[in-house]
Length: 260
Image (cartoon, rainbow, N blue to C red; front, top):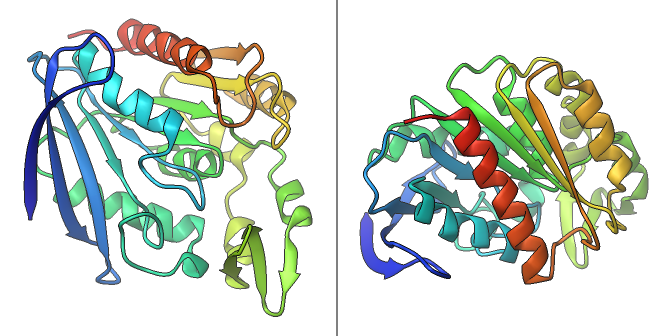
């Protein structure tokens, strides 16, 4: 069921059409999607934006990107992974494999835009998911990785065991299968199989994932690539100037690699 809302994007903007749509993943769980369609009629690829683990599509930085890229003629697509935000499912069932299944369900069922060319943006944990989806995938025209992890197994070592579950953040727990699944998706191995252009963005004050992880991802990529280290930014890019810095580089990357 699609709900259409006409509104302007944040900042100096063209008007855009926002379509909220509910679909089902293969487990039959509702996924809530938001498609932002630019009023500028171009043949530019759609930008699919993935939120972080325990996050949601409205998270500040990715929502800022999603609502401002239509100003530049790029349609954007956001959705809540199962177990997150407005979507159905249990957070404790979350893992990379299920996130990949959710992405496939969204791309198969959202019909308002051409999905033959997709720009994929991953943020934090979903960088690993984005890399796994993009490797050897010819429909991905560009890959943008924000605050992502390269030394991925270090993350497992930080997780507190709570019975047969793992504490992800605060009271959020994941099933014990989370760790087994996570170990299947080495981001360094994945990025070596990515053939599209890659942009990596990271804050130099990130105290969750150090900027050296971004530098390792950059070094490991065989593709055409760019690296932006945002001065003063932590893991979440809390200041508007930091968000704008990231957005400006994303727009430059998109325009350089995707001509109408």
